[in-house]
Amino acid sequence: MAKIQEAWSSRLGVILAVAGSAVGLGNFLRFPGQAAQYGGGAFMIAYFVSLLIVGIPICWTEWTLGRYGGRFGFHSTSGIFHALLRKPWGKYLGVIGFIVPVMIYMYYVYIEAWCLGYAVNALSGRLNEPGVNYSEFFGRFTGASGDGVALHFGLGDVGIFLVIVYLLNFFFIYRGITKGIETVCKYAMPALIAIALIILVRVLTLGTPDATKPDQNVMAGLGFMWNPGDIATGLKNPQLWLAAAGQIFFSLSVGFGVIITYASYLRKKDDVVLSGLTASATNEFCEVGLGGLITVPAAFMFLGAAGIVGQGTFGLGFNVLPEVFARMPAGQMFASIFFLLLFLAAITSSLSMLQPGIAFLEEGLGIERKASVALLGLVTAIGTMFVWYFSADLKALDTIDFWVGTVMLFVQATILIIIFGWVVGVEKGWKIAHEGAEMRIPDIFKVIIKYITPAFLVAIFVMFTLKNVFGWNFSLGAAEFNPTGYVQDLVGEKPNHVARLSVGLIVIMTIFSLLLVNIAGKVWAKRDIIEKENH
Amino acid sequence: MTTGGWINLILSVGFVTVLFVWCIWRVLRGPKDPAKLAHIEPLDEDEAGRR
Image (tube, rainbow over the protein chains, first blue to last red):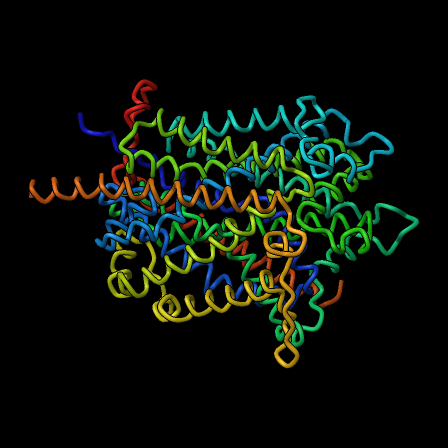
């Protein structure tokens, strides 16, 4: 019997699925923190420039290549590159498109469990009890205070929530593209935006929450986030450009292998230009329009600048904000729905991370949905348990996030844009992109995609590596290099065994993935021969 | 908040909001004919394994 081809049931469905994949914790926690840290004005200029020359072009590229590959019956990055390049090595270029989403899922689902756990704990009133030490709660709940301390299953522990989110993810992914991913995103995305708007109204109507601190009011909170600072000096700061471009890059989930896979389930004449732009615009609205007005201003109003400065994404989300909600009128309810919002943002992203893996296993190994879900479930469960157990200082999570979720992502995005601009060719790519398109991409983007985006990506990647791997001090005149913790943990005088084990896991996963691609290549080669004979 | 802060906020939030609303409006007024959209996958549970 002919294989049944999966596809999206509606255009809005695929747009919401791609937007759901992109909208995550970073929109509500990382972006506002970065904008406030670098001074709103210069950061936003660099941010929008990066959106125009990196974010949107790569999105269009991925949508176009994905739909094109789907025409040949391929849905994984390796399969699509095989169909596109017609070279024995082509499929190996796409291996990162399998490794990245699968390995990010291993720790992302753990963070997703925190969000659900915090929502339930907020609803039960546990987070609002007087005298709660939020960093202590975070340390115990997430296991950041020591290896193995999070391996418990009470209401105040992460275990039960991890099991729930794992089952939810695999239940929906097993149901397939339409009944699983699309259904979840069709409800979750509007719900997420509605919840964010409710919290936004609450934050903007707080006035001066503490009369004894008149300086900490809603206007000052917004000013802390949006006052432009010294724009000219800011724009000369390479770290600011790195932060802004990185935020766009990670926020839009480009290079992940997700958009290319999702787009492969479209038909030849389904629009990709307007759909791609809409998915990006939805992400930007959630990030700048909602995230930029909620978390940092709220935190400033209750805790002042001192309570925010130096807090990373997790610090802001899981230490600062619970305290803010505890001091806010009706804070218990708002804390519950805020963490529910984060959970919705997370589950629409984690689901998207599973589909590239499922697609690859199905088409590469020729196995059915049940078998591919079981195999992927086993592989990801091993990784998640690793992150769950080795939780001290979140070292395993942080190490995998850095080497896979950041470094590999840059590499994959660069490969994608070079294939589109230089291998397929801009003119041919343009023609493919505009088949069935409901709007035209301005021609200036031909130059951007061919020259500017790859050059900008490479420049940002080099800067990123110099800073985050080799510890460059960003000085040209008196350059100094002090290898960062990510390197010291592996080859320094006092190596960290968890970091080494984490890199070992990445290496094993990479070898395993390359072997799978090799096997898949043989399956596809046979298929190519049969197709040639039939023609 | 300073005047510059207001300008920054209005331009940034305004830009993404207008872009979002315009895109959604364009998508919603696009082709309604289901034949122009991707086809719907089989709905029977027992077919899931063959997908």
